[in-house]
Image 1 (tube, helix red, strand yellow):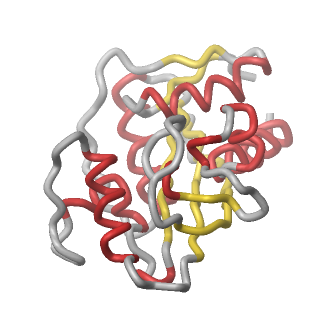
Image 2 (cartoon, rainbow, N blue to C red; image 1 turned 180 degrees about the vertical axis):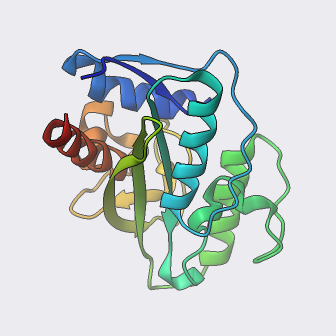
Length: 201
């Protein structure tokens, strides 16, 4: 079984979470020397993960772990969805100006669109895909919760400050990394993928 795994991301937050899960298993988790500009034009999280994984494998020639994830809010017709990282720039709902950073712009847009809406259920979804050149294995994970009315906490990244996991009184950004990995969509997707890897190698 391979022990060296390239993570198809330049997102330090994602890399930190993935390392925390995989390195205790004896896997060397590495980042690409240079992030590739991959057009994520897929219609689903899984399709986008596959597009990224294949691009990085073709460039570096080693097993690649790619992940695509996002926030789904039923009250917003499923948005941000596959557009989670660039929701601020979509015409849908109005373009949000980037001031402090893209994450903050995305959060401001969600809170603006959710103002006055009582049905605030939402969920994070993630697909983690391992690509070795001859196909791939993938795992899915979800984390159910609610959209808060204002940001809370300074940990994590993305939409974490405005997402409260079901059964918790803290936002995702107020949880420790260990707590987050136990319940997060990414943690669940990676654990499911590891189960499949163990059964196939």
